[in-house]
Length: 255
Length: 132
Image (cartoon, rainbow over all chains, first blue to last red):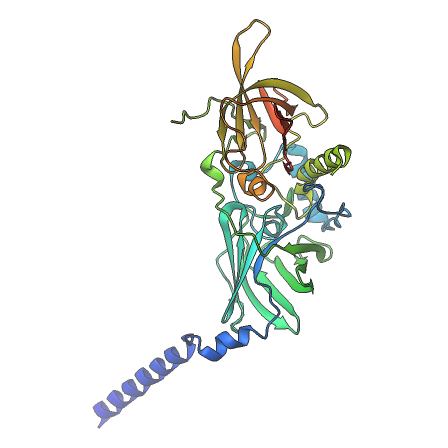
């Protein structure tokens, strides 16, 4: 009898685990999920910021607000500024990560699929995966360059929350972040082919107050995203002492 | 577009590239530490090779120096991605073409700089902001 009870308990537990696993497994998208996409604001396509001087296409932008740092992080920034590095490791082809990834003078392609928005950044061939299937942000994700993102639709606006950033990324130049940094972005169509991107960086340890910047992107229906292999022929460099330079050795011979 | 407006546009663009690192905008590299952004020089030569590559195109020009020897100069342009959307193609500049290049010189004094414009014999001008 005692033996039978144990078997029954084991079976019940096994069934419970199987049911739980079934429940947490994402469902494959149904036809209705694809159809529902048509009701969302159409963010799809290739977008680029018409920044100043790009062949005279864009107006001169007002200087963006500067992040207000806490005394401890202002001291860290002063220390980094004093090293007087010519440039950042982007010159060595290291991608910038969030939030700078969204500030490139290169286009982005937005893709909407059931439960997900994918943002392809041409510069450095980066991809951001924004899950809109209702999942919560993980409690303690591994730190990454672009962080871990979830999104939700607030009426006409895609709101993206991101946490978990690599210490190799910064808020701005010479401005490190703490492991408490999070970003909140609001993507909203402002015209047939214009989109406003409002980015707020929150970091109670590094920032005295949240830092918000807004960028406008223009859609180019006739553009496609091109390949961008930074290491293909990168002649720029930043050495360990922070000196920037250009390798001007003879180019490889071509047939 | 008028030449002055175009030149201003270019200046603003490169200013944006330099200042970009303090804001969200962030390019591949800062220009000012390696190129003298306040200087503009001109050199005439024959295209030896064009590297239509990321993150920047490189234009290699054979230039005859004062003593009659040929030196190869290197000029960094924008990315092929940027330029291809603005009228350039990978065959816009072919080897053997004689051009006048205006550029921001390298700070270390070596033979090269940041490509600004290339004027071809037929009057066609290729600029860092796009082709005409």
